[in-house]
Amino acid sequence: MQAADHYASVQKGLDILHACVSDLVQEMVDAIKKGTYCAFRASLMRLDALFIDNIWLLKNTRQTALAVFSLFEAFADKGGLVVIASDLPPSLLSEWATCRTLKCKT
Image (cartoon, rainbow, N blue to C red; front, top):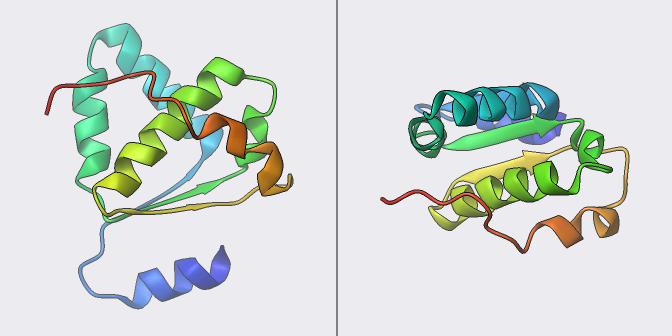
């Protein structure tokens, strides 16, 4: 993750979010509670890259993990770069990447 972060940081004009997954989840939950999820999602979609650390914290939170990976999938679909770091192997994370649980009209 550090190498990708360094590379992205030297690129001019890239707008990047660096966050722990727990902070991202808290912001997402707050947005859902306030009824501002679509605005939250739109603000992320304007970025060029997401660098998300500690993704393993989602291991035992299936619904939360599905929502987060749905967001990542939408971000990647629009051409954004998603970089995640985990203490778990990718095989334990891949089950979450197939569901789009929270959708917004674009």
